[in-house]
Image (cartoon, rainbow, N blue to C red; front, side, top):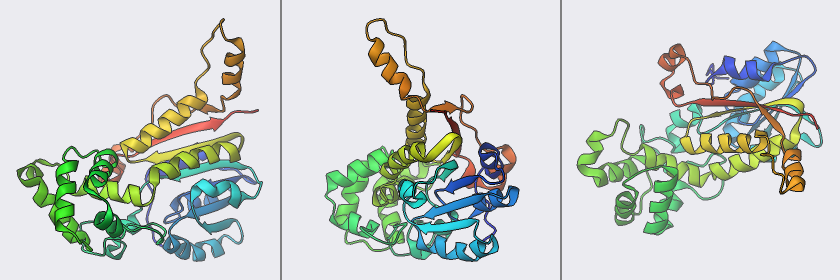
Length: 305
């Protein structure tokens, strides 16, 4: 099992407040860092979920060490309710985006830093990034890259991809993007292909859709006073988490014209925000792990019925 330490480990464990007899869901098991920290902190149980079969395979040895306190499931965290089979949980943790294991393994096709097949599928199933770039029309590619990658030159990049296909390797795609940007590429603080790769990955894995479904599922499985902790790296993901929590935690505005509607709104209030602003990694962690710099942690507590 890798010694990889997930982002904001201490802050997430603090948010979960592990205690003996409690049950937690690690919806993005990855390298198992969050789950391990909770299991070491208390005699609790953890359900670890990951779409990546490689993550589940890596975790089997770890599960054996905890003698039944760690259960692993390959699947989507949005399905946590089914995996829990009616059991409520005291905490749900989500660490969004791609894992270090996936980025560092060239054969998975998530990164342009080492050449590999243009894949990007977390589960290994369904449409790959190669399928997408080789079959989608120019307008669809431009929309995906512009919306999910927040790339201002999305249409120019999409046009270049269509002209260059078929594409099957990460290095090929990175080269096409860099060439399409021309002189603008030199002005990017990050690699010019970063936003395009990010957008394709998010589309292939339906990451925003999965997050939306997962947040709703977490609200259903948490018992009163259970905690939800979400670490997001992408602005679109963080905004979705913020909006969801605000909608479920904001007190209804008083209205003498619609008292029944006001009552219905209040009944839908299910979370209490823990902190008005998201927490960010400290300077030491950012220096130790540059990938953590964009991380934002939001925490909320499930209200009693």
